[in-house]
Length: 253
Image (spheres, one colour):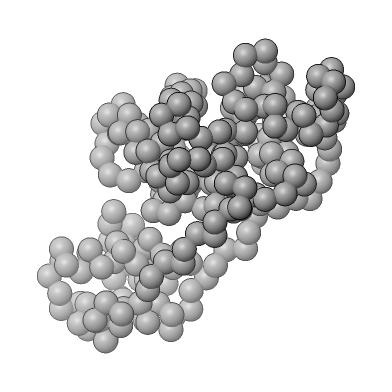
């Protein structure tokens, strides 16, 4: 089943979320988080995109950025590939680290831009990991009060006032404001029905489960790996439909 094309932002601005595969940890320590920030800043120069905000949690990342010459998909591919190569080398591992497809949403209005930026900065707070937005070390809120930030902070600050001192005060107040905004992380999880899952098998030429069970293991496993990547398909569901144990499915990558 072909994937749905990403909606194109008229402003070129997107809110992006990268999550660890199976929600696994992608940052073991501060060195890892520092490396990821270094990576997004490195490719900002190479790909000529603008970064307005970021938040690094243990198993996922939020970015607010604007594409220019390179497309959003090209940008994220370069960032993730570079970081995964470094991470795998450091921890002597191989294979995927991020979910197969990152999530994104368009940001086309001033109101949406500011609310998404606030949501990103409040992410650790709403997760109960910080007492306020300044307590978390790994968000871009600190960049907005730095005299030499590598991020494009002017876009947001100038929306509050042309006077820098006033702008800082209004920006800080807005970023601290209590709200119930929900972006990406809080979207309802999509669940595929058993019939939809069987439809994916049929699209792969498997008209009944016994055909899958009679395949040689490499061929069978390759199909199962692809199905595991589909959002809304759970390991428990795959196990129930195929008769293959959850422990076997969990080991497939």
